[in-house]
Length: 72
Image 1 (cartoon, one colour):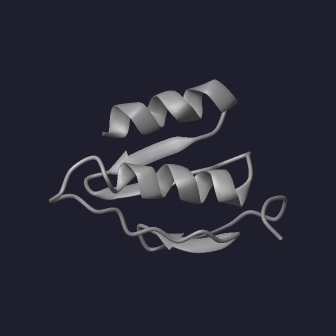
Image 2: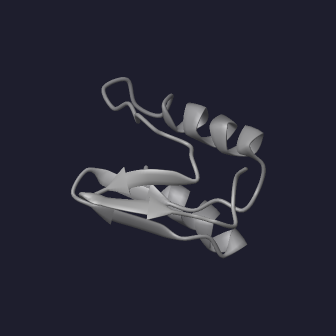
């Protein structure tokens, strides 16, 4: 599952990082495309579901990350 997302990120020069079951990724295309990708990922396996948050600021591994140049 993660391999497909990483391949997608590699095509656009975005960032993908994972620690155990926490994933952080950047996205340089539309929010609509991102939601479509994540909703599609949630259909890959019936017992695995991704919970996600789309924002310019979010917590990841007890650190608040902010993107001042991204989503508005």
